[in-house]
Length: 392
Image: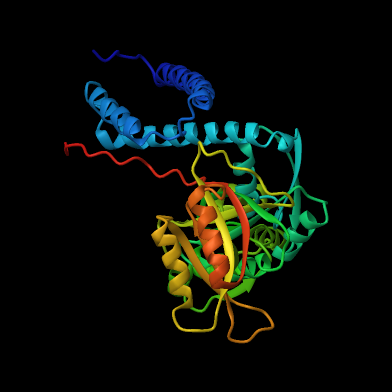
């Protein structure tokens, strides 16, 4: 029976109580996931057990029905909880595998000022590492890499690809020549909106500031705005700062709404990206490579230059297929200084130390003119476990 309440304040008091109880239970569940990780070290079981996850979700769906909760609502909530549990366990196991990487404070370089998408990705990535950040803003990707190479920063965070605008070529080109290793990744939702400093309307806007990538990712909406002047900045944060300083009704920045609050900006129009599900994948680079425990999913990124003859690339890809190694990404970029020659970037979903990957590297070394491993790192892309349940 639903309890009756006498006032809105009374209802809100009970809602607050329930919210606090939920938070306490989530914290307790997270700590239990840590105990699960410890037990898996002894049994050498992998972090993910998708058969158990599927059984868990099906049981929760049935349980939810008893409380008039639909299946989609239940699975959305518990997909998020399971993802957090997996990433929390991975972070714990990686700390044990790389004990010399334990630092109470780390220096992280990223593109733009505070509030840029790279800054948001940095904070999200290191939030699970239980370490304090010293944030180092950089005006371009080259500087992000340089400060790590010279020891001024411990890590650098770089965007590598976006679901709407594709690969970020400048970053791929930097990876050809750096001595740094890729040690992590994170995929962040990108929620673009138009941000203004003063009250205004869409028909007054004639100038938009942002990094070139957001301009590209919002190109379809921008075309509907007519003759708009697009001004490029080094980051979304710099665009927001410029609009905040101008204080004009005809200018706006493309950026994140929560970041806009840092600069006193308010959203004029939300959801302007070409794709509703707009995500950017960031990589984390450091001077020293990390070891990835075999208990968690791993990715290995390598670059290679094949021979200048027909079928050279196909021969290399067949090596991966024959060893049952899944390729998650293949990107080509021109080799600077060598016209018509290309370098291929390959992401594979396997641990560098695995027997299959070691055999693949041996065979690829014979087939290529140049090959280099850029890094092996934990895969942060926790794919939701699919469950089949009857429609309501």
